[in-house]
Length: 247
View 1 (cartoon, rainbow, N blue to C red):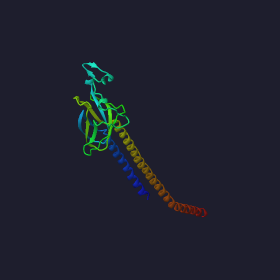
View 2 (view 1 turned 90 degrees about the vertical axis):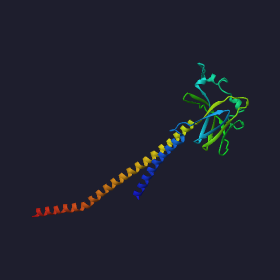
View 3 (view 1 turned 90 degrees about the horizontal axis):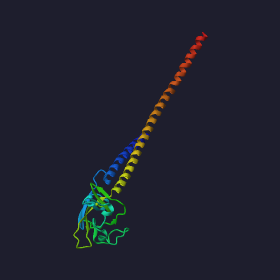
View 4 (view 1 turned 135 degrees about the vertical axis):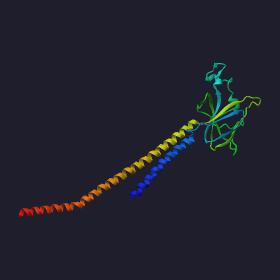
């Protein structure tokens, strides 16, 4: 019975260790820790076809570069950069925005699943989540969640039909959310690994103790078998001594 229990315990311990490795690898894959951050560039106003390879939370950034900030060898600080001379006014594109509601009321702005025609809810980005990659920068303005990877159509048109200006925006997967997922899976993986190692260690210690106790018990049994013979030999020797004394 104990042998079966030990075998089952070893199998369970190895399973937990393997499960911890699978959990860690899955966390790395889903959080994209080991890969490059997918970047989608879109031009607005206009219609853009975007492919999302992974589900998750995405952020839309209003782009700018250092060439925009350092214009004609003059330095512009962040506050002056966001003047009308450098960027378009989002209030003109999205009037009457409400931070607590998805941006759906304005027909000039939409994100639609190309296959299912599902309209994706897009929210104003409340967190200060700007990006800086290879001298390219962006200010977070909107965010949305993709449940099903695939092709999506991002459409934006200006209220001013006479405008011909084009602007670049970037869509990036939320790295903060990815880091949180990676830490969560790492913690779960570590817990499973510790449980597996502890289980195998406890079984090994119990198995060693059982073998040690069995060895001691076997030695005691041999001593008990030899003890009557020793007593008989001792009595015989004593008897012979008594006879010699008598003679």
